Image 1 (cartoon, rainbow, N blue to C red):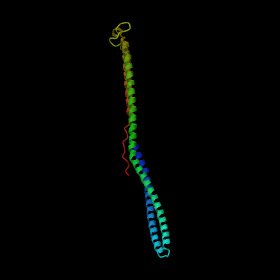
Image 2: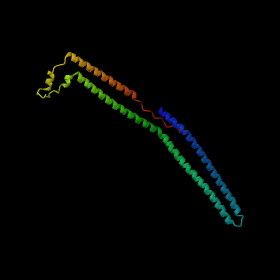
Image 3: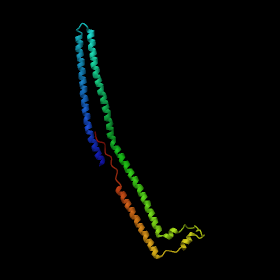
Image 4: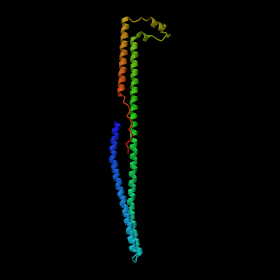
Length: 222
């Protein structure tokens, strides 16, 4: 939706620029027509002056003045024509750059949207891994609290400082009373339930924050 709005605003901004460009082209065309007409006038005037000079006694001086006047007028018209050519060249180059920018802009917007989506997904993945580790630690602690004698038992085959195998000492250790065992079991089940609820809440928050990446829009037609 945001890309659609951005494209609409871009297209609305293009319309005045295109209209202004058309006005500039029309003005340049009128200037070229004027230069062409004035050049024709200069040539016709020179023909008249040339014919008049040939009727006089001092033909060469008269023709030289007519030629100098013709050259000066044509040089000024040529200067104006070159200025128009340079302005047209710059205008066309700017139009090509603008057209390229308009064609590339939607692609850049899509790349930026994909980059933001990847960054968000990576953040959520890190948070999920962190919460899973925290949930596992809580579960391990609950199991240790429910089975204190098992947590104190050592690996089979190891020997206690007194020279008695740890496995034998754990086997001969006094067992907890039924009431204590029931209490430990209840505490373990409560911790397991809390850990499961915490994990479900984390997954629900992560699902709510997940947004699909924005789709690319085609470039506006010229």
